[in-house]
Amino acid sequence: MNTKILIIGACGQIGTELTQQLRKLYGTDNVIASDIRKLNNDVVNDGIFEVLNALDFNQIEHIVEKYQVEEVYLMAALLSATAEKNPAFAWDLNMNSLFHVLNLAKAGKIKKIFWPSSIAVFGPTTPRENTPQFTIMEPTTVYGISKQSGERWCEYYHHIFGVDVRSVRYPGLISWTTPPGGGTTDYAVDIYYKALSDGKFECFLSEETRLPMMYMDDAIRATIEIMQAPAEKIKIRSSYNLSGVSFTPKEIAEEIKKHIPDFTISYKPDFRQKIADSWPGSIDDSTARTDWGWKHNFDMGLMTVEMLENLKK
Ligand code: AKB
Image (cartoon, rainbow, N blue to C red; front, side, top):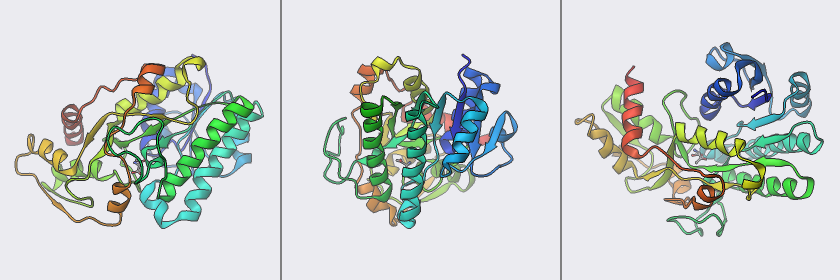
């Protein structure tokens, strides 16, 4: 596969693992990683890396032309908790970076786009359990509003201009390689670090807050599978529901206790509780399963074993 790929936001939680996997599949010379700053990590050191501001159309266009990029994965975004603190910048970054790549595709400069949406597109009036693909969407967070608007624009650019844009609504993502930053679901990563280092964890969500989550391996596979699927199988051009596991802080703590019996959890909900309360507890992703064959592999037990084993190393 000689496709030239650009990842924008390659040093983030998803970008890091996505870059490594795409380099394995497409070859190191075909994958251009980029981010707003140059860190000293594998993404930067193990292949092609460019400093790139996702808000700068000319810079993106320049990199696309320089490497003759065909596919762009736009992973740069401000997540839910950070976006509440900086609404104007969140709107600017989350929307304008998307317009830049959509417009490059409209101009025929790139062939295919992956853009991540989120369970944050749903709101308090959405059915909470087994949230359907098509349902009421009245997000009450800055991040959710930007993702819902982004979905509408993706669908519009596909229908009106024929842009091949593909998207999934990620749930909270759990991984051991790169920590998340600024999300409401981040506790589900932090809990593993603290269980190993301190044997205890103070959770910023209440014990019964159920949220949809997914192990990163599944999320990366979903991302690459939807991008590799034949175009006619991608019938939804806003974004697909995607489901892995679904649990409460209490349930994940119980799972960790099976491996670290003395582990304790306490609860001190903060402003993120309100965000979590507006989101679904579980997601119906049967449309993704039917349309392009999506299937998750990791349940809470397997994910916990993998997280603890890898973080111990
Ligand atoms: C967040 O918590 O903001 C993200 C998300 C669910 O999109 N992890």
